Amino acid sequence: MNTLGAGTRSKNSDRLFCIVRHWPADGRLRVPVMAQVRRAHLLGGSGTPTVKTEATGFTLDLAGIEPPDKNASVVVIEVEGGMNIVNATSPDGTH
Image 1 (cartoon, rainbow, N blue to C red):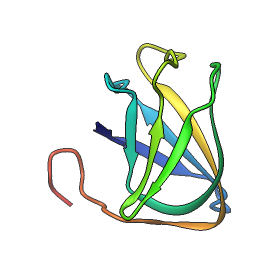
Image 2: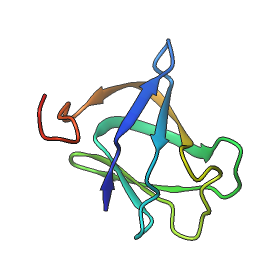
Image 3: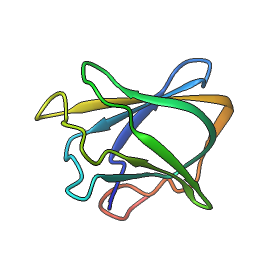
Image 4: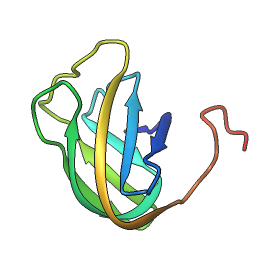
């Protein structure tokens, strides 16, 4: 399972944009953000990821969905009530 490497949010915190540079081989992408997810979709692609809420954020199930771009695909997550980052650790383990 891959953990989100890059992301940004909309100005009013109702959308999270996950930039996926390495599509997860097992189809699962862990997002360390606490939020009430309304829906998720891909920019420029087809397929609708399912979302599983967990104690440390949520996981997007991308199994069976082809990445729209081989270099960097964007998954948009629409949320209600804002969001909180659970772990601000960078991919190399630093803060």
